[in-house]
Length: 479
Image (cartoon, rainbow, N blue to C red):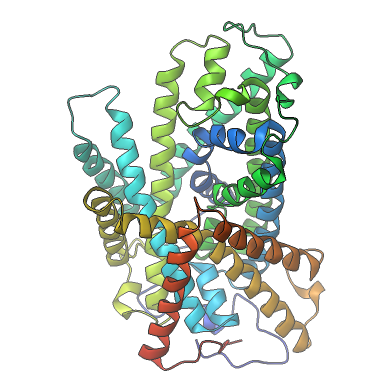
């Protein structure tokens, strides 16, 4: 990227720094509904279907509701920052390019490396979890066979074209959305007495008050839960990854961000409210999906089998989005000259096939590490992946702050931006403070501190390698 600053930044549509090298062009085939469902597909997964029960057990029913509310607000603030950048520069793997441009190429490279590793590890975990769940119906088939089947399926869907991936992910995500809405509706009907409770359990507002008060583990428990909730909302940034393949990005991206954040807030907060009011705090945990518990409470037939199918779909949907994201990150690194240029090459259908293949190999390698060295290498990978979510969000917010400052300094007017985040600079500063605080909290929590001890050295290693390989300073923004 060699753009020279001008009195006013060029329009995104004509900015030469937004143009990929010859042979690396992706195709703008995705509509707003595709971007929304890609974001929902990346976010709604086992974290909601399984871990929400653990959230209730950690923070208490009211604390869990509060934590998810805070998570939704922070997710909106980060995505608002991403929206401003993505509309101005609608490129594939957007936040990596934004970090390169406004924080420096070394930070852009580190952001891409962290995000790629995050989803590569997730791929291995999701293949394994899906294979284990399939044994409910096919106990005689080894888990590795299902891993291979699902890996082949996702690779094929991504390799055909971005349009096929987007359409498949739309329907994958739709199944999950219907399941979440069904749980909210059924739970709400039980709470107001329309649907009878067949288990004899007490439900309603009384569940908010535990034997130890409204916050049984204190505000510390709520804080620790907020940290995990940030991870639960990760995936919304996939809209920025897909920005380079969105039709009419000036209209599509802001609409997709607003719609995705609103729906995620309704789904996550609505679901956690129903779970908190129905699932007893004393029995909440990860032994059983709270969704299954809610359906069992109202006597829904085949509830366990239905939820098993939904959770498998959720895992494959997240894996589908993750593989797409990994491939676009490598493609972007190649297009930016931060990795071999061959990674930026695409097929005639606009698919970066080599980047896709290497990403799938990375996912299978992380799956292998989870079997061979679950207590060492895989632990390190998972820890870095968890840390990467918040680190990438920090990079997005910091990039937007740097962009807006340079844009105004060059004489630009906020009103000339097609889309701009509101309440500047307070919105990005508050979100940045919340994200940094979450990392500090992770370091103080023994159960999560490995994310910091592995994540920060990995980040420093990426910065040092880029500095050694390219001779560029760590802080050299290319505005």
